[in-house]
Length: 79
Image (cartoon, rainbow, N blue to C red; front, side, top):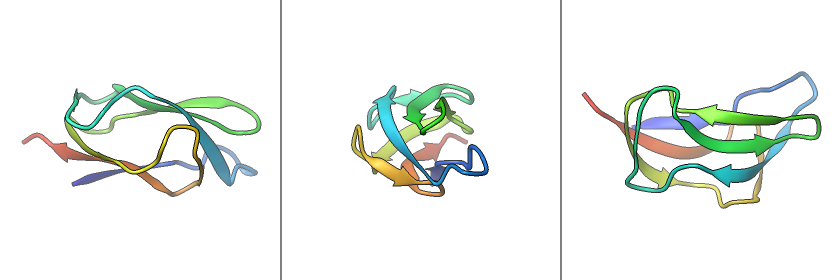
C-alpha cells in the first residue's frame, strides 16, 4: 500500500488545509494525476500521485487542517 503524505512546502509551513479532493475511493490514478489541493498561509499546492493504482482510503476530510507529514490517503499500486 502506498501512503500519500503531505510534503514539507516551505521552512515555516507546519500545517495545511485540504481544500479539494480530485479523487474518491475506488478511482484509478496514474503517476502525476492530481489527488488533492492543499492550502497553507502562503500558497496553494496540488498533491499528485506518485504511483499508478487505485485509491483505497481517503483518511482526511475536506476542509480539515492537517500537519505536514500526515498520511491523507492510500493507493494500492498496480503491478
